[in-house]
Amino acid sequence: MRAKIKKQQIKKMAKLAIKNGFGDILDSFKISNYASFFDFLFFKRGRYKKGDGAALVKMLFELGPGFVEMARIAASRSDLVPFEFQNRLLNMSYDLSALSKVDPWAVLSREMGKSVLKDFSHIEKIPCRFHVAGTSHKAVLNDGRRVLITINNKKQLEKLKANRDEINWVFEKTAQYFSKARNLAWKSCFSEFESRCDYVSDLTFSCARMEIFAEHFKDSSKIEIPSPIWEYASKNVCVQTNKNLPEFSSVASGKLGEGVSKKYLARYVCESFVSQFFKLGYFFLRPQLSDWQVADKNTIVFTNFLKIGFIEQKDRDEFLLLLKSILKNDAKGAAKALLASHYQSCAFSECHLSGFSMSKIEGKTLSEKLWLSLDRAWSGGLIIPFSISQICESLLYLDHSVKKFDKEADIAIYLSSALGKIKTV
Image 1 (tube, helix red, strand yellow):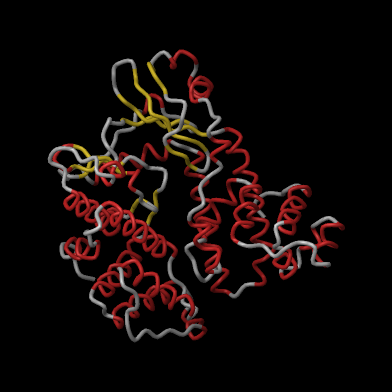
Image 2 (cartoon, rainbow, N blue to C red; image 1 turned 45 degrees about the vertical axis):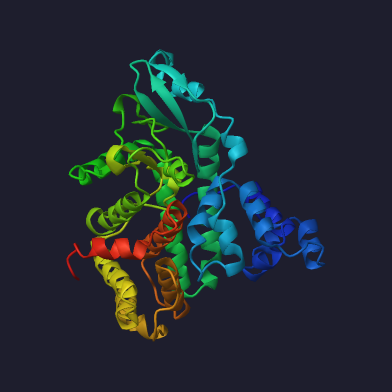
């Protein structure tokens, strides 16, 4: 165990689980005895209504931001999360009521000293974006530069740290009841959760990611990456350049500027993701219209660097084969890619424990085809690298966002065109 947690923390988790109708899950893992005598008794007598999606979300919010983030990570895995809970968990927001109370001026003063506050002529108190540990605010420097300030909430960070230990405790207590494949899947989710905790707990990582993306797209005339302002950077503060430009969401609602083309913008966005997946390795998680701005000549400005995933080279090759096969409706090629990923992820002696066959590609849209293929693989016990499922999730969000932006857009066509420039596996 990474760290010991207090007995009252365990009791709180057990109490909330039982009161929200999930006592049967505690019982199945033989940890319901951690609840108080009366809660355990009421659970055994059926006093608590069986929990649904709404009760699960309520419980996660009460447990803290770490549980919300962990649930959001696991939500896309149909082999881990029952279908009736998936949409609720995928669409969960953060605790906006607590985060909205953060005073950006106070955080800047604490982190960098009162003298630094003189450099800012204006900071919007109402956040324009939320993340698991804090908020982002639009601001203006005295020299006229518009910037975006991302700050961490001290109390949220403390809760996140406590949740990290609690989730680790739950994982260790329940691991023995899962199959090896499911254990590995949960371990991958927990590993991703820990990486995200580290990432948001030190916002200089976001600054570094901006520079990595900027270097990658330096020769692109259609993708623009903001610059971090390192003189204001700290573990709890990230300041980046921010232009006063319309977001994709504004363009989607009909507020088109002169010379703006939805068709070209949608294509450039999709092409940029192909470049991220197969050349850079880093990619934006769960992309949304609010993450992009429109600049001159249909140039796209990426603004949100708080959600970044990574895929290893060996997994990129397998995913490239999978994506190309799905686009061609080649079930045999898709199955080959999924099986190859599985063989790389498990010992050869254990390969016989899984079974998988796919005679056709099911689904209408590209994202549906990808997810139904993954579902088929998971149901057969295949172990798929977590980064591949993350990319598929990002393509699902990309598909929905692009369709919302331009109803006539087809990301399958845009991705196929961009993939033609990628070397064949």
